[in-house]
Length: 111
Length: 114
Image 1 (spheres, helix red, strand yellow):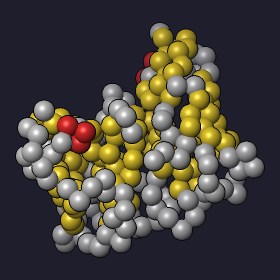
Image 2: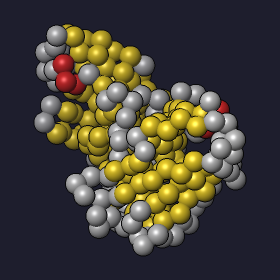
Image 3: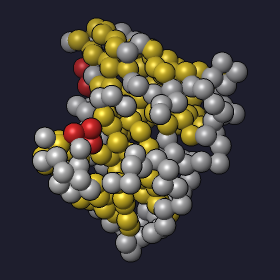
Image 4: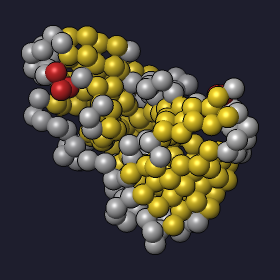
């Protein structure tokens, strides 16, 4: 079963615009991770944020985490056509090693 | 190798046949994970290995599914008497140690059961 819900399910933006997607989860976590998937194949790890962190940056990516609301957001700034992909959040519960994935957000960046 | 590799890339089989899916983790990674991605269920955890041991098999969907790992490296996921609902992409990941950190994913095996 899936732990997270992602919003929106799909997002279409113009190149250069920012893309924001949200993830909500149900149980306590040790950390939350964001992954990208191109063409329904392998997942690429983007960023990990721990439960005691509130914000993290990596290049054009910015992730926030609000454990009181059990939610996270991923912001991609200055989007490029190559950012077209599906983005998944995944949570890791305390004392466990399984990733529980959300349903994903499909992002299309138009040139 | 440079990354996690999986074989075959694609597999088409007939209902009732057995299939074996292979995963080669990143060299030196002691932890290995299997996930399944299907249209109806999204991405779901199946099983993980620490070395050759799989402490938690509760994610396997039925007793037709089994997995093993030998020599702390290659892992095989076996599905017996395949059903159409087994059609999915099977993803393998590995990490340096069994930890709460990043898992590195392979390209997946796309299984179609006719």
